[in-house]
Image (tube, rainbow, N blue to C red; front, top):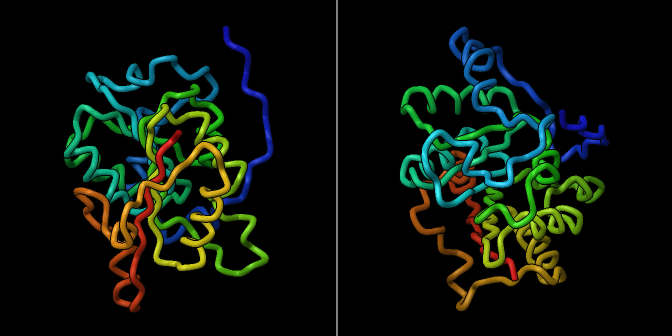
Length: 232
């Protein structure tokens, strides 16, 4: 029998956990479907993460903070040979995604509904092909910047689990967070920015479906930046 995982402090990178009351069907999804798809961090991670999925997959992709799940579902549907791990602590967002997974009969998504750093520390080294961090909470007040997910500690975590040549994709409409991310990745030896021309960081990722957060930003007059970093 495996040793139980050591308890550790949880970094508070997210805010509230629940919003409006759930509908009956959403509550049922959380009760019955989430346990089927949820990663079991009490057990050691499999050496081959492909074994987490019922069908064959040749790539593994991690999305941290998937919000309403639009991007995650879109990517999973268009890439059935990729296994996706989605992490989202906000209960209403998780319930929304579970409904989409059931309705579209998507098989290549696994989930976790708490702090993403727990998943990052659980995953095997060099096991992930791509990490998506899209419109993370910017924590705009300077006193809260320590809660931004992009940090030296988390970039170390990313570097450990990404395969050589693996990608970190970051999107935000908050200029200060974009600059923050560029500086942190510039100062980290494991990551190199892939942009080759000025327009690259304003060009959405290939096949980008947009998100409700992006639509809100544009309505409010903010443009978005799309940054891709390669694991050295």
